[in-house]
Image (tube, rainbow, N blue to C red; front, top):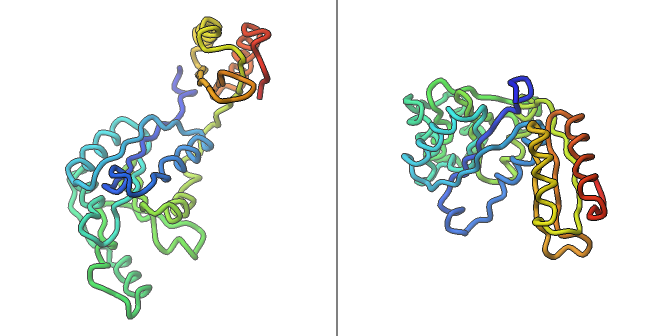
Length: 249
């Protein structure tokens, strides 16, 4: 695949003991995968790590080198287990500093309910960018970014608002997809899929059994950034499957 057709890549690092223990259902990675794919970004890694500074730092450091964009979710509040900021600073060997503008905003918004501990949410890795959106209702609280790492909160509704503030900066050429439903099993259609995968190396051919579907046994997906190649690969598979095809979408 040549560089011009290569999709930007991303990693998602979900942070929190509550996810690993099953106390909280993980929703953030699912949301980010859908959003990034719609933007033309290929998610290549999803990792869940505990609230341990060393493990978060190691995951962020490794992902930052390997992928174009890295998104962390969780661990940026005022409590003892919110160690994401310190971990990301450690990943890039920079100190944590307190942003005076954020500190003032916290005091202003909190009013009489202000606690000194809240100021931990004004701490950022030195050299970080504070990205604000155009929606002044929500953009007073910026998204913290350092290098290619974007720090997002763990509460799904807030994460979704924060991602909306930065969403358009990740837009790339879109993916194109076709879906083929087969009434035959994977073993029966494997040779046809093998040929298509070999003939169209820039197209991803996926095969997913649906054991409980009433009208088909396998969903075949054909994905790529070259729409013409996707269409040709789909046509070749449909021809090869013949009467096994239930429908194409």
